[in-house]
Length: 209
Image (cartoon, rainbow, N blue to C red; front, side):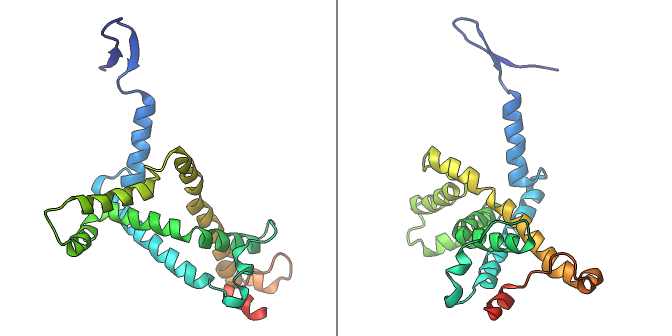
């Protein structure tokens, strides 16, 4: 096995590996994020997932809409509790507050996987096709918004924290689905008074108010 190392040409001091393990690990994470470790096929699958994410964001906002009278009440998750009801409220609140950011992440992820349609749209509205500055600016903006680049280190750290939001939405959404769908169809849940009752939908909760 060949091992390459860097040396200071003036002092001959060993500067370490040219390809340290941390670099290899980061490249693995990037490949997982971009291509699911599967090359162009993985990137296409990633793009389809991003399209589904866009649909989830739009449909989630529609399902969340509680009406004008209950709008303020629906913007807060309420008192924390170990219950499916709180999980649903947390899911709704987090999703609606971060809707714009989640939508941007999803759309830019679609662009990274399927750039041609986006570039055609830009070219369609570009009067001077010999001017590459404007399309490049659009691409740079998409990249910067997705990764939080070009806005300073505070925004990068903010993106790190907010990047956990989709995972929280996935978990709370799963809990909500289990309580509203699986438990309602379960004979044990329907016939037993014990335990927490299945949580109502947004429309049902609004109708009761």
